[in-house]
Length: 196
Image (cartoon, rainbow, N blue to C red):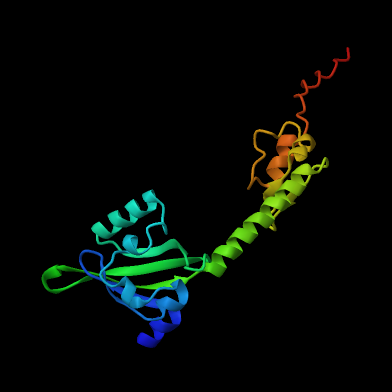
């Protein structure tokens, strides 16, 4: 089990019933730049008060007070040299005999590369959408199920009458029906003339 934990996490930790660290593996220093012994006896907020905003810390504390599992708690750390690192924390409450709450036990992972990749992807998407919107031609992208996934403002002019249903996910056939000119009902043909 320890080898599985070592592979899936950059460091392990334990907290007591007051959420103070009682154990932190030495590998935390490689990720966050401070020693495991520095963490002992401190809460997460005492170690890095700026790693979460006020509301996020309040939500985290409420989660701990409810003895709920901690999942994917993303935190931002500034290392002594000024480098920014992002970590994700997971942990489970630990209970002793008769259900007495003993604290938490969990793992931490450096996800800086993931945060950087998400930021880069978001910026690339922003540029792509900006470039499409700047075009004067109507542009749309459809998926293999013939559902609209993306369009620019100029595309609206290509589907007059369909503005009310033009949205991501609309089927191509539904859009075509809405955009098709509506035919007025034709009056029934006159009855055949009587010959007489």
